[in-house]
Image (tube, rainbow, N blue to C red; front, side, top):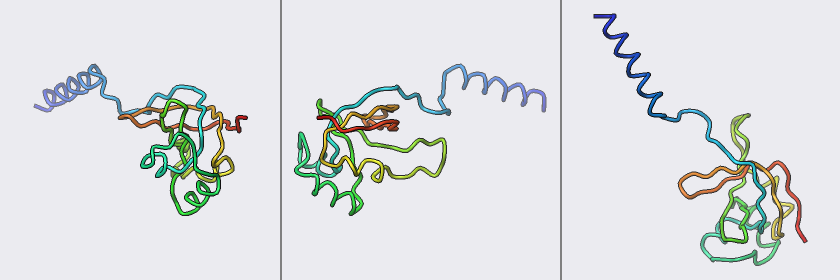
Length: 127
């Protein structure tokens, strides 16, 4: 009976692996994102194409609203931390210097359920 149980567990494991249930790290794509840095609430609720002002974005960020990158095509990218070192942490400190500005951010982009996140490797203002 023990042998049958072991065999059954082995078959179950083989089936799980065969159908490709992903329990590992998500695959990201190296990419460059260009857009404006603004607070997430304004990006989502006000349908802005660019920030109202840098001061507004900074004030919202200091109040706790996550800053995002609003790409030219309207896609919102959430700056996220690299999870190679946990716990994950907010990225406002990293992007607040660019609040209200157009930027070019290079990094790894992840997409899940319609949301887009970017682990920023390099970010700079665009003129």
